[in-house]
Image (cartoon, rainbow, N blue to C red; front, side, top):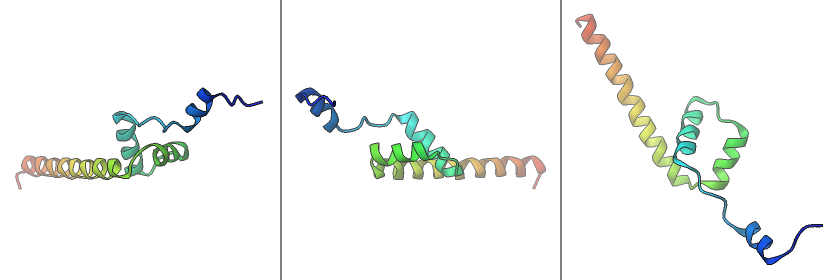
Length: 81
C-alpha cells in the first residue's frame, strides 16, 4: 500500500533534479555523434531546458569548426602550401 503522508506527496511533486554540467556536455557530444542512449535522451527531455542544449550545441559547433580549421591550417603549413 503506497504511503500517502504529506511528506511523500511533497516528494512526488518535486521538480526533477537539474542536470550537471558534465551530463549536459556528455549529452551534447553523444547527440552530435549519434550515439545518445534512449535512457539519457528521456532524462534530458524531462530534466533540462531546451535553451541549455541550444547554447551547448552552438558552443560545441563553434569549437568543432575551430578545431577542424586549426588542424587544416597546421597540415597546410607543414606541407608548405
